[in-house]
Image (cartoon, rainbow, N blue to C red; front, side, top):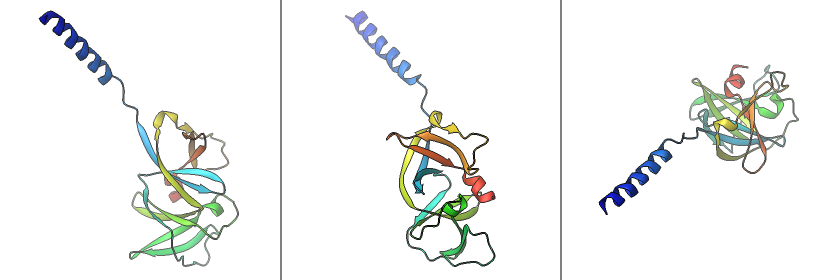
Length: 159
């Protein structure tokens, strides 16, 4: 009887160690937003907050995609119209996603914020080198079958 129990428990231990040896899938979280009918994902490590009501102060002599600045709890944050930055038509009603990249905060006007998703890192595909959209670092398919373009937040702030 004891030998049978040792074999049973021995098999259970082997099964548990086999389960423990399965590599954990690395996930990356993105905030999905929409702009001009396309879905984009911003890495959540850069997202500070989402603002739906805003008053943007216009600045003279700046590129057309720079809509102005906002005062967010005493901090002045530049606002970029994401549609205009990508060469798309202007849209009046939009919300702001505030990003913080290497200590610099920047707001981007987007059409709508959809959801936050976790995506396996293995499903992220790099963008083509000759891509017309320089602010896109890659893409991936989502569970619902749609495609998300990966926003390069660092490049957005640097450009």
